[in-house]
Length: 214
Image (cartoon, rainbow, N blue to C red; front, side, top):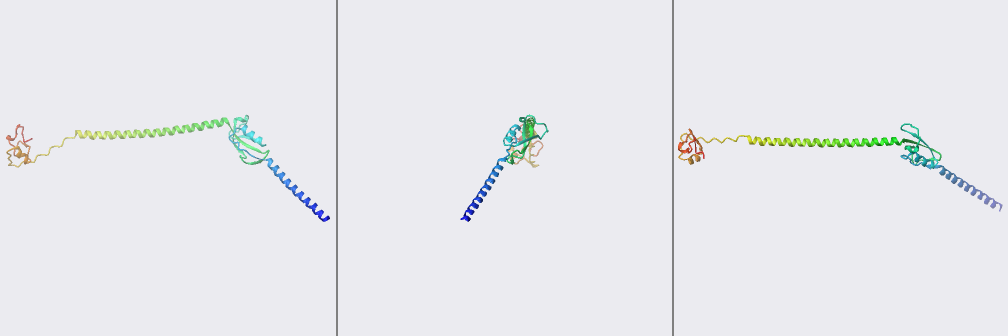
């Protein structure tokens, strides 16, 4: 009976010890969870809004002008450009988040410069395209004018070219005699010129020295 009672007591003590350890472990895990936070991504926010978010989570903020090294007076006039630790990192509460910032004046100036550069580039590309088009139009016009001039020269040459000389009539035989122009034409000797064999005044109706001319 005493042995049984002792075993029951020992068992109870062991169970109590185990329960205590589990409770302590759970409490420790909860404590760790409570002191660890997820760092939000605050880049591109103004410094005042970024600082509010981080401090609301129990984090400290240290901001530095990474461009000109100027002192930060009015937080809303600065923009966060980098952060360490980065967004999504798990850190303990009361940790310091280092922020790199740039003045909004500088941001606006850089944006204006970038927009001007883009506009200048677009204008230059448009001017280059216009020049290419103008050069092509000029070349096409010059080619058309050249072709027209060549065609006009050909037409003018055709107009001024001398008419081909008529083929000389086949000489009539030395003792040729034609009773009529029909005979001369049949023999291929017409027209007959004065002094040419076969020419007779009787065949030269208009007495111009050419017989059987028509």
